[in-house]
Image (cartoon, rainbow, N blue to C red; front, side):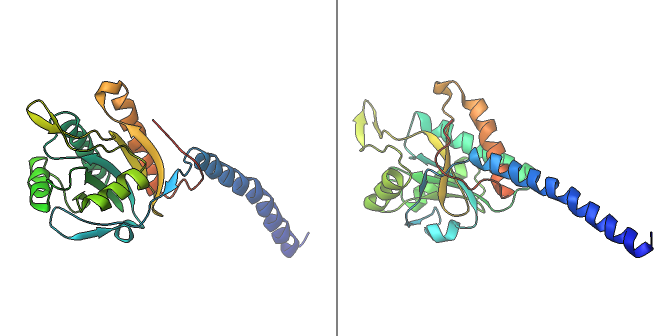
Length: 220
């Protein structure tokens, strides 16, 4: 057999081996995608951050991001939720993850103006290079929180010595296309906080690597 013939057979053998390898890779990616279905695509929004700078949906496209919902005068769940988000901040910094954003949206926009959000962010040592606190007019907040994220938001009501606002406590994972890909309960009162935080960190890493673009919902 000539060297040319041997070369042809080697090339043919390599091609045969490549087919199952490629099939396995595609199958593995598809399997992972099925674990990350799409719940909804967020509508356009235009809010301002703690530095009174505009932040829109377009600004966040191309980034994987996590959203949560708080208000600065909240005496119950919000400090805990912000500490959990700070845990994500530490994770992102420790893992040197790129193109990841954290977004905390105030459900009390009448009170939480940019200067108040800035003071709140400083209290929790927020890295504003990738974590923003957002506010706006009430209609814009209502639209993005309730209609966009499908998260509960009540009205500001007196509760003993302070005002309270009922709101959703789950963190929401959003992909680079502005699509909701998962909800994660991180409230210790629900008993699965640590497990769900671990799942969220894993999912952030997966999406940061470009894995997961399928359809429906993931809830923890």
